[in-house]
Every structure is written in structure tokens, then in C-alpha cells.
Length: 274
Image (cartoon, rainbow, N blue to C red):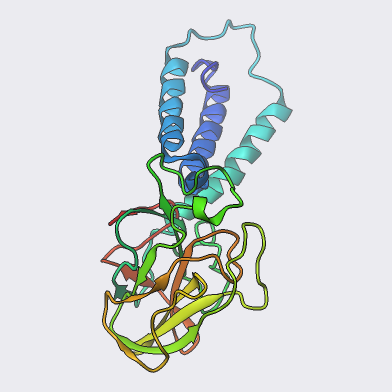
């Protein structure tokens, strides 16, 4: 619509431009790009710029031509408000809450995409959960910029992150270990054990939990001391994981604590290369 809309009449152009900005911003910031590939993400941004340039260059309408029906304008405004609000929410999620702790990134040897993370519900599905409010969910990208070979394959081995080694993000004491729960196929979850196989580490006055680990992969015992960077298990699909990914969150006395990883505050669609 922006591509075909000239700059005159100005009112209709600004309404269409606002809608295009909202939709592009929503898509670029909030869409699950691990599903479709990072190349598509940047292609969409390029298409928006191309449409804007084409619109600016297009000759104006004849004076007799109307700017469109009031209903169409209203629809465009509503779309702008709806998708624009989500885009702004993702931008807001980049604000680092006070009291953030510093942790080491728990994965190595790949490019990792943040599926959920940040300080706003638009970017983080965990934002309404008390102890997990600032949790981060991570997947790994393959050479095509996708998290799996396929959109939503049933075979767990087709997910790039499945079976990847997980390392302790801090030095401390292991205070909780769960292993032996099955790895679910995509779409199936274990609501009774939402975190699945997991390891919780007491790091100072903060407890850090790494969850959805692969069955039988946990390499530490409760009560043992652990150094930052030590192997603790492998990424799986246990618990309420709808697909293989690594979940990590920090809490203090049951209250969520924000965490930076290697100095970075991770928000939805951020990429970490290790």
C-alpha cells in the first residue's frame, strides 16, 4: 500500500506511512525470526525502504481523486496503534532494570537467538511470572539463519540447539538437580514439571536456574561446588518446552532478578555469537 501511495494527498500518505512503519517495526522487532531465517528479516526492512522511496517519487493524484473512505482510514489507524504498541514495547524492553547481576553466557560455539528476553511483555513471555520475570530463552541458528531444518519439525535432532553443551554461568554451589524427565516432541509439554530437567546454582545471594535440559545429560550433583564455565548438561526439550531451547533465569528469595550475560542485556531477537 505504501509502494502505490504517492505523497499527495498528504493526509492519506501519512496514515499509510504510519501503518507501514508500525507493521515493519513489529515484524522486525517481534516476529519469530528463528522460524523464517534472518535473511527474510533484513529483506523485509529493505522492502520497506524501497516502498518508501517509490512512494516519495510517485506522481500525485489528480485533484478529483479522493483520499479513501473514512472506514479505510480508521482501519489503518487501528492497525498502526495495535502493531505499533508491540513494537514500542520491544524497544522499551531494552531498558535494563535496576539491580541486574552479571553472568557468563552459558553456551559456546555457535550463533544464538534470543526467543524471549527483556523487561517488557512485548518481548518476554515470562514477564508475568514472579520468579521468572526476566528469564531468557535461547535457540541456536544454523547456516541459513534458522533455528531448525524446517519450520516446526517433529525430529528433535533437526533443531540446531538440541544436545548442545550447557556451561555454568557463575561460580557457586549446586542447590537443585532434576534429571530423567523425557524430552518432549515439539507441541507436547509436561505441565506437571514445567522446568523439566534442570540445574539450579547458588551464586552469592542469587539462585540461577538453567532448564529444559536433555534427559540423562546432567553432569553435576546437588551440594557440589561449581566453577563458572563448568559443563552442567546438554540442551533438551523437557518440561513445558514446546521445542528444544535453553531457559535461564535468576531469582532472589523467589523474586526475579534481572541478569546481563557477558555484559549484555538480552532482548527478543538479539543474536549472541560465541
